[in-house]
Image 1 (tube, rainbow, N blue to C red):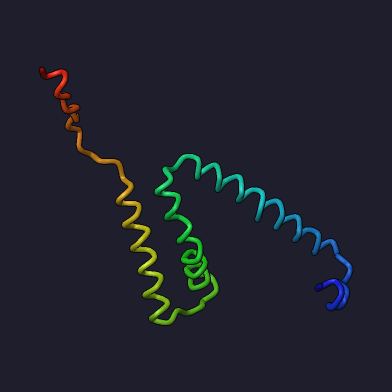
Image 2 (cartoon, helix red, strand yellow):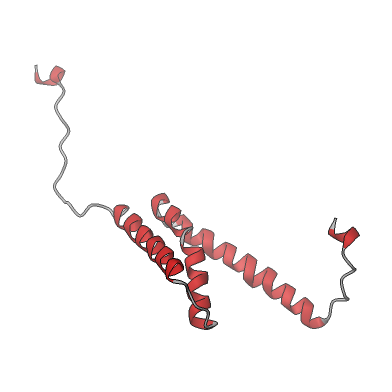
Length: 111
């Protein structure tokens, strides 16, 4: 529909093509490889919590790099997400208890 309704695109320049290559190769392909390489090394519970970090990371980068501001409600939302991710990661930690767990003897073997 956009091809029919919108005006035609301007011709691509060398700068435009360089930008498209950057976005395609670095912004998409390299990040795709790195993401799935990292995800393969993590437990599913840890990976599920990482999806919530993407918007928070974007907000923090906008605040730090671009000087954008947050409303108190947005800051509270970011804090809730960070707390949830922290709690989820903490819950997925392996237990440090080294006490061996012995199986319960079955009644048939005891008799």
